[in-house]
Length: 346
Image 1 (cartoon, helix red, strand yellow):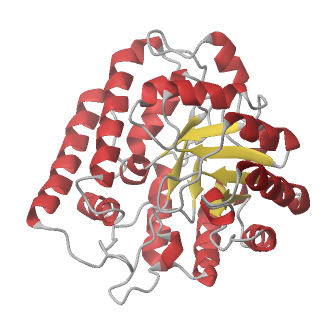
Image 2: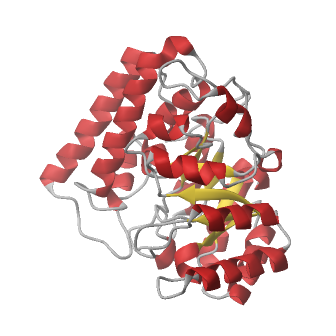
């Protein structure tokens, strides 16, 4: 399947605020995204890009390029080139740089983010950030659980992160995760890191509206907080999250694009509520009933993209029941898209 690039502008601004699930005016003004990351003045969505593999478990760079074209035509604001969805811990560092170069060739540096999956020390984080930028990533992203594992105290964790930010001297992001490298940031520490100026974005798994509100309140107005826990997506955006980076975005980016572009349209209240619920249910399926991240690849394959449901750490095939769940989710997407007037890219 070959996807041609869309000619339309992918970064149109849109007003924020939606009656019923609306952003409060003060929050909408406060969450104006950082211009240096090239994101629009509306909720944004970034795609955590899966890593296509060949039958021999090598990188399938042709399939990766097709996948990136699909995400660009579907309206993604940015891509996270090396992520948990991309099985970053099973990749060599050389492969991570290859995937970053591939992403940057399609999205450009400012819209290409990549995790510093080699960043287990302050020095390694700095070196990794420099190498990712050379490979075309405008935003290297520090993985908290690699640099400051659970055994590290909060003061020491903050000291290391500040040290990376001070010494790197280039824009950086922060990547929280629950597994397999658990570490989240208290609002006060996040505020300290954000005010330092180097860190510009947080991918957070603290998805409750109360937690999002606390994180937003602790950071400067140009700091981005992208929600990765979409169980209560509408409320998270209402609480001030700048946008979304989630597993559903990797499978059905058209829905995320529609949600973000129409968030400020009061006439879209009911359809957007449906989309938010559907995204939450899909993420729960991908993390629960289907083997992660193979389920993401299986859904993409069922949609017609040339990607095998293979992983280096999980090579078992999906069961017939799991394949049924995949096909049912794709059918539901097509029905929902038709009902809401959303044109699927494929």
